[in-house]
Image 1 (tube, rainbow, N blue to C red):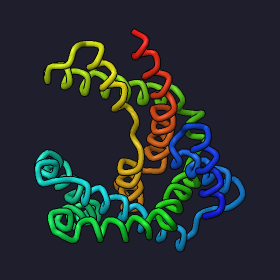
Image 2: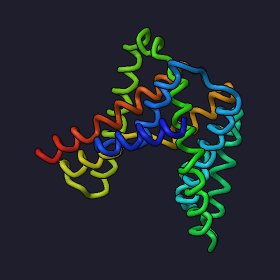
Image 3: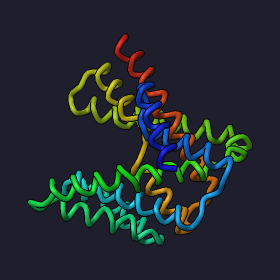
Length: 222
């Protein structure tokens, strides 16, 4: 599994796409021949928690104030590990040990647990559901793109950027990747969401990530 993650990640990197997309695709391929098991899921969950921990380290207290209420809500519906991992990272990120801890955890996470997390995410994809719910998947993805462009673009415009620059900023903020998938996977493991919701979210991640570069090229030609 790890070899597949590394290989597909390398291929996608050479194609100018995020490594994680290759790792998820590798998981999708593996999922055709075998199913996930308890050991793989435990390693995957640990990778998800490491991603959230690193997100916390890279944040500051002002960022936590912004996401604090949503995080507390998530914890309230039974996914306390999401808030816990983020909080521990946030606290360590305010200390003098930040750089040392971040470096060591990143090496451990990205060499084993995080790639396995993305592979296991790919193994959970239910292609039949995407085919049956194709309209909703496309609508959900379109809404995700429009909301990012409109929300971030409007924020940039109010901050003093012109219309073209605001559009480019909004498009640049379209992709959704690791942290979102980590939260959704933990929510799935806790029974808060079903596998169908995760499958639609993964579809959205693929489309938003792959579509961003050509959209940015178009925006810079305006």
